[in-house]
Length: 105
Image (cartoon, rainbow, N blue to C red; front, side, top):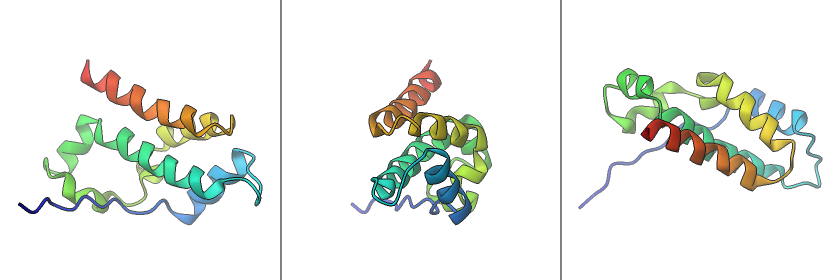
């Protein structure tokens, strides 16, 4: 059985740059991992929002239509930036888990 492909857009260059700079990452730091983890958490933050599902007509495979999820959810992006300042990717991951848990209530 084929599963539908869920493929969000990449974080735009502006938000990637803002994330890395505002979190205080240097070229020697794990900034690529920061972007990847942040992208996953933005996906969690967007998909646990009922408004997102309404906007996509209940079809999560259309998530690419939203474009950069940091542009789509700037408040969530701001929380990720604050968490990223710790340089602990687990803190960012915890945000996504918290948002999902809150949405399940």
